[in-house]
Length: 303
Image (cartoon, rainbow, N blue to C red; front, side, top):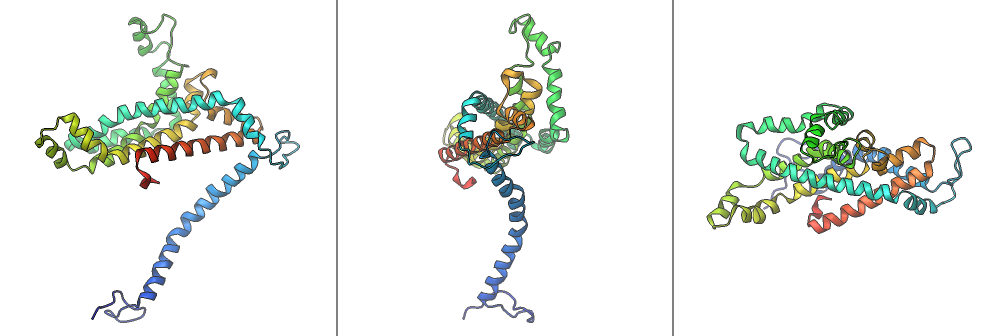
């Protein structure tokens, strides 16, 4: 005879609850757990998203003084794509280069922490997240000193004749991409480390026992097992970098402005419909690129 598991409500220890009662308890628990997160998403994501989409369809002829009329102006999207296509493409290119640079820097670092750091592992992890203890703005401003015209880096590159005598690093695309790479590097390191930490070292030892070269073992064993962390890190780096405007504002020039700067300027200038249309366009574009990337990477379980 099979025994039901669980304790009946109000019953003595050892009494059992029937399956329908356990089902109702499970449902109530699920509702309680989901209520607060769903309310948060509703108030701080769904409602603002609908407001943003609605604003993007306002009549662009309106103003803050006269108000905006809802005319379903779909042409706002085509207008902003025509007017700000250059900044949009530039943002995606900068974010893509910064993401690749983060991968090149973060993967060896995460690998070393996971497999080689030994007792220094915790100290190295603290060093990775240490920049978070400082303001994002302060960290970016510090690069103005590092890449300044009188800084030792610029002087050294001029001495090596890599830069022209009047060449500079600050206020260039290089400075903007460097700032993006520096600020978002921890978002690449931590997911990669989390994936590499789970890799069983015996699998790599097995590869060596089968006479595979270290590169083949890495390509066939380590890299595929670390792919979830690599994909997560790529998303955590690329998405905020594409919409960032601080680095371009502090380290760039008018010719290196990103789409975030344009959106900020439009909102400050009272051009709400254009700013909202550009924001929605950027969001849809990034969403499409992320879904395509995840499908190509074969890690649909991440979303």
